Length: 189
Image 1 (cartoon, helix red, strand yellow):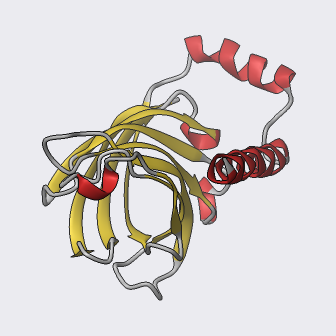
Image 2 (cartoon, helix red, strand yellow; image 1 turned 135 degrees about the horizontal axis):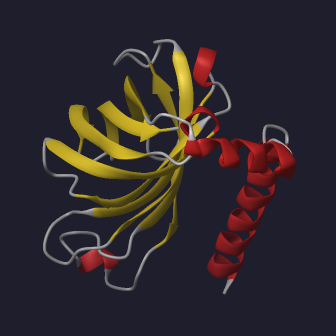
């Protein structure tokens, strides 16, 4: 029971922190309504982004749950983790940070090591500061190249949809550490 209480408290505090952060950058409902009304005349924009994601197990991502069969499963079925990883301009950890990726992932396949990912790319640099993109989908992590759908966005990326193409730069399978190149194409207003 203690493990479930810990997971519940972690999720509660993440929710509270998210509300605190986003309440300071979200516009008033009237401004959003005015923006939405202006969509009829607005042109759809296309933005291409390139950055790197760094996941370090036990430093930027932590296990929050696992199923009884996780230890005996070759795909770690049921393993779940929360992440708050760095997004950088270059593949080095010391590269300029352009944002964070925050969310969760869980091993959701009996047949291959594939993660179900629900994550938000929160941008902190220059013209995209305070904007975000949301990704939700399957991430077959043993594939060198993968695609994940972008299902929404905020700020500059309101009503976003698109694709994130992922390529491993570094992947330490036993340690669970990775550096992944992201090439993103997103449509938004």
